[in-house]
Length: 220
Ligand SMILES: [Zn+2]
Image 1: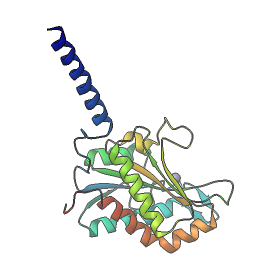
Image 2 (image 1 turned 180 degrees about the vertical axis):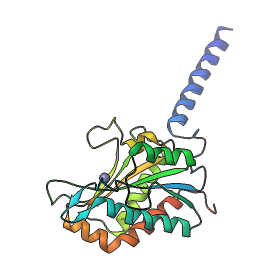
Image 3 (image 1 turned 90 degrees about the vertical axis):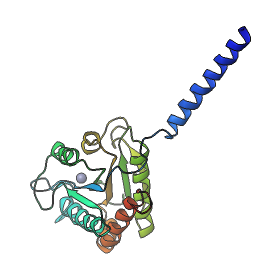
Image 4 (image 1 turned 90 degrees about the horizontal axis):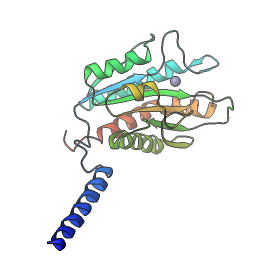
């Protein structure tokens, strides 16, 4: 009797360990792909909030340009898109989250451009939420890989949290209920990155859209 109890206990321990590790590996994730065809595209800043500035160049304009291009690539591929702004006007950070949440978007992608006091600093990075699930990370990695294959100055990697603190989050990553990421599409303070942005805007947009579409099961 005692022997049976020990065997049963050992089996329970093995089962618990298996469930724990399978859970960690994401095997029990309900849906490791987007839940519907609606994607929220967020052009950072706008209106009286220009974002980062270099001479007469405003981050808000670059963000909108790329966001609109990505939106049209996604729509061409049969996806539905909700834009947090489609023109040069101000939208608050929590309002951007509300738009995505109320519309029930399956994915949220925010477009920004970086800045640094040192003009030699360049490159593209993607920010995932600090508690990013498998899909946020997968999306971030696929997007960065796709952008790299078009050509970027430096691959600065997929990062979690914020530049200030890996345990905090950018508002749009924290406030959105769906998998999300924030792309820093090169440094507006870098002439090299601006040249790449202008030269490759269409190709970057197509790369981001293709990366997002690749998250869906084949044929959907
Ligand atoms: Zn920004």
